[in-house]
Image (cartoon, rainbow, N blue to C red; front, side):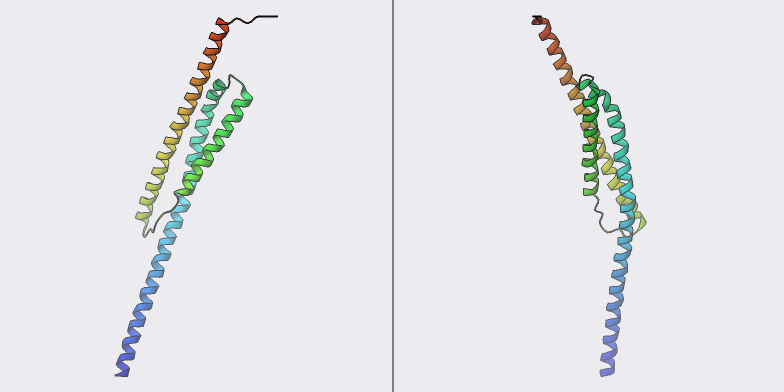
Length: 161
């Protein structure tokens, strides 16, 4: 009877060790896919952010010059500060949403990446339009101030003493 009990315990222990080894292997495989997904996602998020930022703030120089009444120094400096803020906000957001849950195979990795990159691209589009709104709003306010100033100067002529 002891021989039978010992052999049954040995079988149970072997099964438990095999199941534990399989779980560890499964976790290692999942982790490998997650790390690969991170290594694909991060450069794409950084590249998308750089591309959108470059296009937006290259075009934004014209708006800034108009807003700041053709004063290149302040327009350029302000545009650069807005660009820096754009990078910080968007790269920070890209890192904030970085987490990807367990991935068991290449199909799941592609699906997770499509979801993550697609969401980030939509977010960047929203940020692009928000910045364009700010540019147009600044241009409108600057134009209104110039019109008000011109009207004031017409109504109240300058006196030379």
